[in-house]
Image (cartoon, rainbow, N blue to C red; front, top):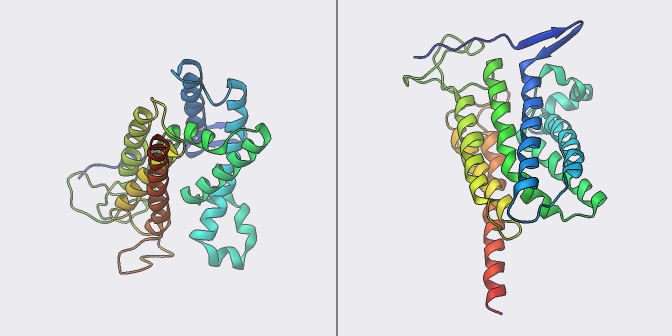
Length: 267
């Protein structure tokens, strides 16, 4: 069993302002994504979708989509009864509670708005942005690990950890599983896949498929949300249920993208 490296969730104070590591993870995520996409704009071997100036505007819209969509998604998907009883809970973001699936919907809507404003193709933008999304996910899971939250199920594997808020039992460090699979590995896959020109929808489809599969897998090791538990069959979690549409849509987009190429080549 490994010792959980308990870290103060407070990074530092600036006068009356308290800065948390979790909030810094969001800042690090957006700065890293901005740097990688800026590099791709300048040094890509094929025409870039956006200019550097447009990229800054895009990330601003995406940040709004992440925060608003993530919070609203959490309340709808994981705390709907609480939201109905007290709608003001939606604005109490300092108490925690963010949903990736809600954040994804928020980002897609933000990118759609940005595409309309700039008269760009939405799918070109999502294919351009998709490869760096796992970077944001990786930082987010590190934030979860530092907070000692979203830990895994009880286990006796050698790398199990005892989390302060998880009782006196060893658990899977599922935040680190997600950091590696949804973050590092998915980024590597998408980065190398997108280094060459791909048909429209292909990169976005691969992201949806990859994240959906990895999240579905990790949910078998992650402790279900206490307010929901298993929602079907004695093993299906809310995270798995929300990931299924991503898997099917990702498969559909990949088939559609490459089937369209074949159809064009046969005409």
